[in-house]
Image (tube, rainbow, N blue to C red; front, side, top):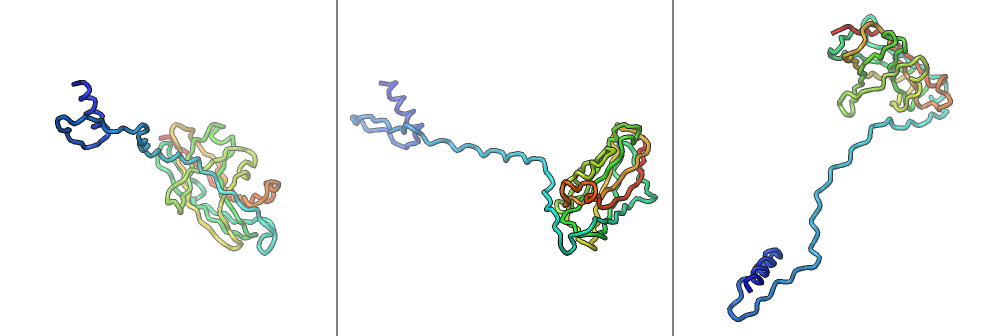
Length: 218
């Protein structure tokens, strides 16, 4: 009997019912226990990781006012004497790329920085290239194309630039360590990414400029 009483008290404690001790002579009855207790609320799961950002698809250009003709964009780089001097492991150097559209309207126009394979004695340049994103107010790393072909014209994304309009972008470069020292010619391409895939050579090359990068040891 002592064991049975202990079980009844435990069951009452688990069920959360606040019954008192029954009077003498009254039968002891256990509080009903639900056969299917309410499930506990699961903790909120962490939000899923965001996938890597990809450039938004660019609408293809259409013929019409401002939509016909060859691309022609004047590109200027704010690098004094066309020489950007960096130190391996040192801070980045900032410069501006200015675009002026003297040709047709562009639904999308992007900027790409490149160098050739034989730069730095055909060693990996080990450079970090970033562009300032005014919408998110932070620097965003950009692809730096190392090739002797038209790989720079294969990019997607960009922003509109109408005929006669101008745009200035903030860029910066950092020479990572370890890495090669010496000089390399950096090409700055304006790419008309609204041109169709079949027109990568003639229609996508909208203009360009260049400067010389000097990477010195730390």
